[in-house]
Length: 322
Image (cartoon, rainbow, N blue to C red; front, side, top):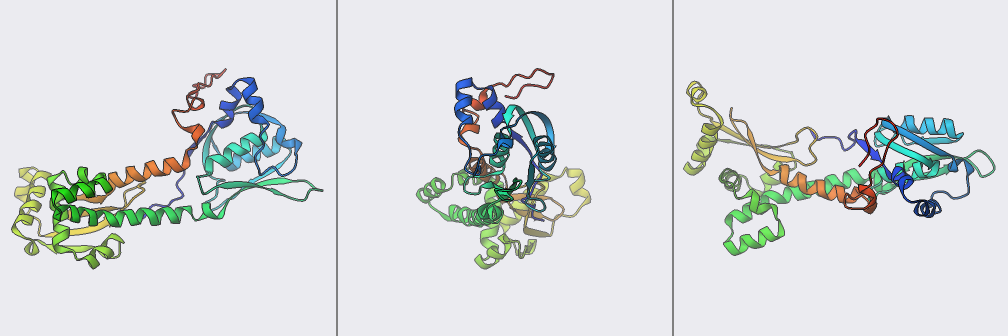
């Protein structure tokens, strides 16, 4: 089963805390810059808060801020919304608008922004509503499509590498840095060869889209492929087990998802011998984890940024934030 893109996360809101600990001149300069969503002056947004919440749902936090600030604050609820997300909040003497901007930035990704919208009329009480823009609403589907495209390309690159000359292999490895590591193992090369020899391009397309697994019998395999499968079987179990169980007769090639995995995995499963990954898996997961982090982390939040490394001292027993 494919994992939902709406995963409960524990997210950290540190922007306001860091600014509060900065020198007074820098803090004053930062506080003069209001975000674009504040269309008209609102004194309620200037009320200052100190918050220490190791774990709080966004909806609960907004309710508390609204109650103490005499203001209406709401966030998009339901599938894809923010109300039920849990975040970590450490804020010291910070204006409400900056807390709100920190929450908005926390859920925004480059090119897929969230936004606060003023509600009500200028003449009456005004509130603020946090919601996703159209790009943010489509972000999950867009990333799934891109990951699936990369996943489907993987086995094709592996097969081309297997059949290529040394010069051609170097070119393929330059275009796909994961190839050299993937194809270094004898077990992996054997599995790719099995797919290349017994799965047509049309079958492979349906296989990688999780539409149709491929089933093979040992009788269909070449002698070298039988030896490859038998070696995996022998390495997987002690001799006592193998003596009591017949050698495998069937092999299944299918796509699966592990719990919490970002990317699909192409498995070759030898009967009673477990399944091993041959495409997708950790290399693709690591590559996309880095891409998503690049999209999510802003310049000021990078670990190498001076503010990101500032230690925030606490007056109570709560551990400092680094």
